[in-house]
Amino acid sequence: MCGLVSVITKGKNGFSQKEVEAFSQLLYIDQVRGRDGTGIIYNVKKNKAHVRTLKAAYKSSIFVETKEYKEAERTLFNESNFVIGHNRAATKGKINVDCTHPFREDHITLVHNGTLYEHNSLDKDAVNDSHAICSSMAKIGYKETLKKIDGAFALIWFDTKERSLFLCRNIQRPLSIVECTTCFIIASEPNMAQFVANRNSLKVIKTIEVEPKKVFKFNLEDMTKWEEEAVEYRPFYIAPTHTAPTYEGDKYLVNKKEYKYGDTIRFKAAGLTKGKGDVYTLDGLINKWPNVSPAYLTNTDFEEQVRVKVYGTHKYLQNFVNKRDLVGEVTAIVIKDGVQSYILKNIKEKELFNIGSWNPLLEHKEHNWCESCYSLFSGKATIVDGMECCPKCTSIASAGCC
Image (tube, rainbow, N blue to C red; front, top):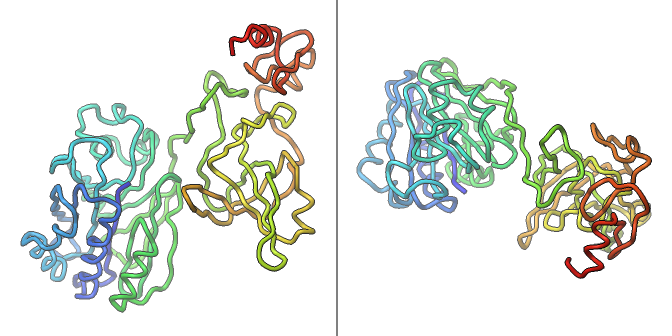
């Protein structure tokens, strides 16, 4: 986990003193998200695409007290339109200046929160995964790079050719914009940004979450607004823990474990508990395999570490108790005691079931389905440990080998 912070002033004559102080406080506080390095990007010569960077391999509470940073603050006040900060929590690469953000390659200067599964397809010679993203953007552009990023990311970068500041994220990392009357504050944690804005008497107009699969762009010609552009990302999959019973070509598909607001989750009810007054809570378990018929689902096919919750009256929720195939819309996300829960609304039983390209129920009616090895077989199934098993799995179980 790393932290991103930024302030963009709406004024054309540089930052106000309050805005500079707000950024320095953001950078200081943001060390809770990373203490292995600190860096900033800022432009000089008012309204010009001349970029400077400053970074060091230590935490921001030390960084903001250095002589070099104090000089940068004076430049912000006199000459800059934006400043971007990064607090590093090292995941890939050494803890040194070379691996500290920001990274600069040709016309691209970038900071990144997240970790990639692999980055050789972007740049095999990069010092770490974040540097690889920057290098790739400089060579093939951000649109093609975003199609190749394999892992979690929230990104802020400046392109001197386009004279623009960009930001984007995928569902695995947060990023929000807090708009104030005189500036925009960008941060990984919106509550922190709102606190700093209020502390410095910067009136907050609104707060929005950066939407995944969109790039937000601030151009130096007019930093009082942003533009949004839909872009294509690499599809996001969570690696399966065992062979999935559905496939598309030679790629196994599984249910994702991370959702955003408005997404639809498929789940089963796992109990009803009474809360305060007439409010009850329906707990549920997320279905790991979104394209599997309920007839083939076992207890192990539901995600135990990520829960769903639905609030309502007993009369309403009682209708869904013991249902194995429910759907609902995400309205909030809560993390408590290490367990992530999705709060759902508009729940209902799944009416139509779309199995997809491979449907053992419809296309192979003459076969049975083994709940142990997930294979189709001819003949009669045998119940082993509550599962319908094929002859091979039955013989293994009888021999005491499993």
